[in-house]
Image (cartoon, rainbow, N blue to C red):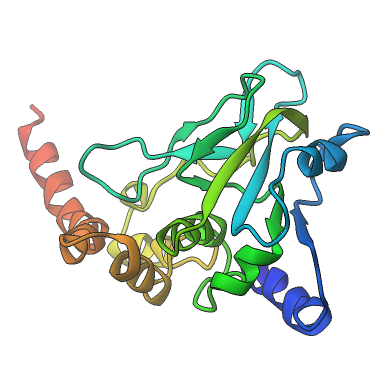
Length: 221
């Protein structure tokens, strides 16, 4: 069921009809401080306020922040969120979040529900923060780190590194990346007025890649 599908299954089958103050979402590879949940609760508004309050994590060496609140990192691309919010002892605002450890309030669940149904694996947590803020809610970052979680050891290869067009398309449409339907919905909902162009960029790049390789070979002595 992958990450997003499994999270939705748990919500729909076990929790959606229960009266919750907060829903605590977390990843099973995170190591939490003993007071992690209490820290989130201490800094959360009352349950009827539509908010997601996210805890930040360091790597296992404790040297850098790996997951938590995210801020937009591109002036022109509305769906680039590589800037992590580093805890500074205060509650900070964020544009969206990683759900490695976060509280979602009753007010947020009433306003926008849970993860959108078109997601399979990645980006469902990013999209949740975006739709919550669009609906008038907030994404907040707790004052300090709540645990440790190393970055996932994902492949360094991108679809443009694949040796064939078929391989590039297969990699791009991998369920853990951005299958076409998922990417289409995400960009149509949150990509701004130029979403068709932004949506199409990786597909155009992949189709042009064989030509680029051919020209590169022809330039070699």
